[in-house]
Amino acid sequence: MEVLPDIVAPDPVIVFCGLAGAESTTLRDHYYASPGNSFWQSLHLSGLSPRQLRPEEEGEVVGLGLGLTDLVGHWDPRWVEIDELVAKVEKWRPEWLAFTSKGVAHQAARALGVRRPGLGPADWYLGESQVFVLPGTSGANQRKDYDGRPNRLSWWRDLAALAGR
Image (cartoon, rainbow, N blue to C red; front, side, top):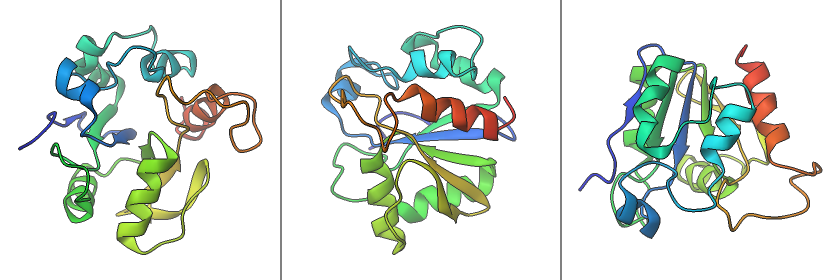
């Protein structure tokens, strides 16, 4: 059973990939809709969207050349469907595949048999798309250090700059 449908622009620049299965997704039916999640704010403050979108406006990412998908497309996150993600990324061919947390990136790396990445650009690709790892946007992720940086937004701004935004 699919959790949320993929929302991806034709010829996307960046596709954001999270991990479905969270109770907040079940209850809200939108990407990054839980209280305290900073995804939509970070998207705006990084310059990737002209205004802060609300989760129910998630379809507007298509007009921005972006996309949204999940590493696990069903309610049980114990089974990582890396082959399905690879096939989708090869079809969409974004410049960047941005994992929206280290945890998601580590799940993908393990499934692919590659080294676990830190935050920022990874030294591996998925299809022809370079991987970028963002800090988790959950409200529970309130650390004081994000791989040597004081906040999450600086990583988002790096991704926006690398994507020419």
